[in-house]
Amino acid sequence: MTTNTSPNNAMKRAAIVTGGNAGIGRAVVEHLLEAGYEVISLDLRANAPGHARLHTVEIDLCDATATREAAAEIAARHAPTTLIHNAGAIRPALLPDVAHEDLLALTNLHLAAPIALAQAMLPAMRAQHFGRLVLVSSRAALGLATRTAYSATKAGMLGLVRTWALELGPLGVTANAIAPGPIQTDMFHEIVPADSPKVAQIAAGIPVGRLGQPDDIARAAMFFAAPENGFVTGQTLYVCGGTSTGSLAL
Image (cartoon, rainbow, N blue to C red):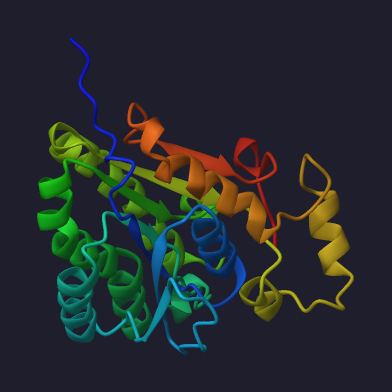
């Protein structure tokens, strides 16, 4: 017997993308719009939509209460069944300097926010017997100097998708993570200035010999989000140029 867990082709497909205004998030939004999705972009600064199927929400996902309220409103209005949780922050510090407030903020951003969004989406996913949950983690989940709070919370995402895969598989919902290596975005260049010779040094230390681009991650997200890929769940895909096979210095 074959069970079809893909949504009806005529069914509206709506996706939430966090951090959708720049970098990886913007690339994901563009790919989803091209594929015909209605997209709800959540970001600290909401840009003008610029597309009939793009809706923007200005929100600080480090604020757990605001996130839960926005999640409930979005779910009621759009009934999304796809989530690409890409929003992230680094807050680098060596262990003696790690601040509790930074750990709390990144826990809310990287872990509490996708939980709240997924919870709000559950009724629509149950009703359609379909859902795609994609969390953008980081190669730093394997460890990276000055990344105590960042690495810990990004590693927590891997536990989320493995647990959700077990719980939500019978509902036709998959959950997967992407772990990017160094990607040329504004956030990367906040740590390594674009005009620094260190950019070329980092690229030379990556097995494929280059930094990643936002589209590299967006294509992986689209694979996990695709209705036809319902047999892939609980997985972490390192889109990192090979840096997950050894050490990485930034």
